[in-house]
Image (cartoon, rainbow, N blue to C red):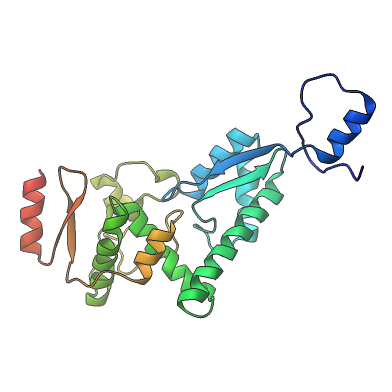
Length: 245
């Protein structure tokens, strides 16, 4: 009949004779769990979710993630994954990072002709900011253009989304956070990009980071519709702020 399968499998709830039982051991489908990493989510909160759903240790997940991933954050591509029931922390992180690396390599080689981790880290950092800031996929190239334009001019990015890192993923950014946070994620205090990505990214955010819209935009403000108004000057930006409030 073949060899028994590895891991947990479905054999049904009915009483089986010995032949049917042996057949099930060699032919039954494996028990699979579906896990989804939402674009913009941080690895810290994702590991907490995995630990809860799969009965794993969040600290071990983080330990093995850091061992396998070349990136402190965003080393796991935002997607849905199917993993066997009973998988342990080490094998799960190895699988998720390996599959993500394949995805990143495919995208990078298609665009750049090669896959350079240092270059790709910058792409992931920028894509993670876009992922946090844009209201939808359509806005992503516009947000990207603001980031590129401000960097070229030596302006601070001054974006709230960069402070939604780690455990602060869903925490509203307050004046106190802006004042007290001294990490590179605080783009109100520090020029340039943060040293590492903020969270998981989608293909739309990656494409926007690599190919921003051609604009002169330097500012954007969330409007009452939940999207953003973009502007080229501080004067125009102030009008958008006043209108939104």
